[in-house]
Image 1 (cartoon, rainbow, N blue to C red):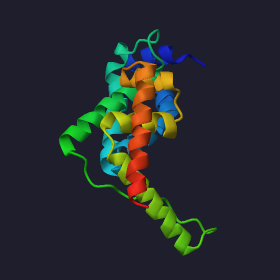
Image 2: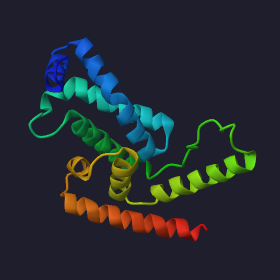
Image 3: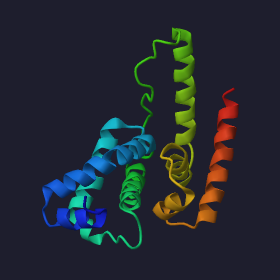
Image 4: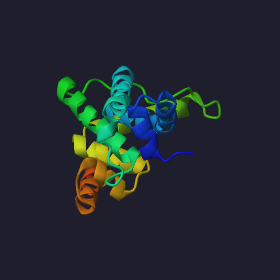
Length: 177
């Protein structure tokens, strides 16, 4: 199998098969990140689509010696999310929970839904940078180094941002108890 930098070069040259390989590999992670950032299904689909359109049209800007492709794509998605927040000034939250789990009682499902809604609302009250850091590190499972690259900051600055974000989340969630 070709390495990613070669697949990017090929896709920029019009190789649809190479593009599809990259899309299939990175789509789930980018979709998850954007959905958690925006909390809006319609807008998140648009942002994901724009992210991968930029891979197709601007893939020549990717520099494999500076970052992994996943980092580059997350950086594009992050910037598009920030643009989204600037345009929309934080639109309303949508449901995060999927189908109810038959193993739990309806009361347990309601409690989980309420907890999830409270956590989502608290995350949406964080600054864009705090929200991004928390989602990248705790939901996307990225290392601090990878998240710092995406957010264009040092690892120590990211760690401080994460600590402030966790403290703010703790305070927001404690108010709801």
